[in-house]
Length: 162
Image (cartoon, rainbow, N blue to C red; front, side):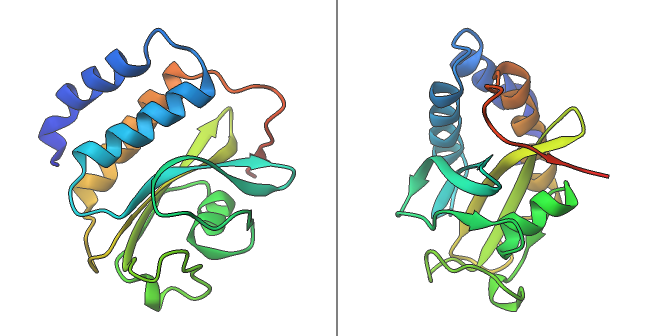
C-alpha cells in the first residue's frame, strides 16, 4: 500500500463509515478494512482509553492483551507522546508487550481530538521493518478520516497532552 493510494482508500473508508455514526460499528469496519488492504500483518485494531487504561476495542487477528497501562509498551508510549510510533523491531523496544510472540514490527497511531488522546489504532506484523514512512503517513491519514467520521461518546476517557 503506497501513499498514491490515499484518494482511493479514503473514498473506501468514507463509503464504509460515512453514514453510520456509531463508534463500535465504525471501529469494527475500519479494523476489518485495514486488515483487508494492508498485506503481511498479523493484527490490526483499536485500544480506547477508559478508566485510565487502554482497553481493547474492535480488532482483527489473534486475541490481544487487555488492558494496557499507559506507562507500558508501544501503545502506552504512543498515548503519552500523542504521536505515531513506527517500531522496526519490537524485540529491541524496551518494555514491549508481546501479545503475539510472532509480531516483529509495529505501527501505532494515536486517536487525537481537541488536543487529547482517546486511544490508539495498532498494527502488528510478523516481519521486522515491515512498515515504512509512506505507510505511516497513509495510516495516519486514514485514522484521521476515521476520526472525522466517528463520534466518540463523552463517557470514554482521554489523555490530555501538554
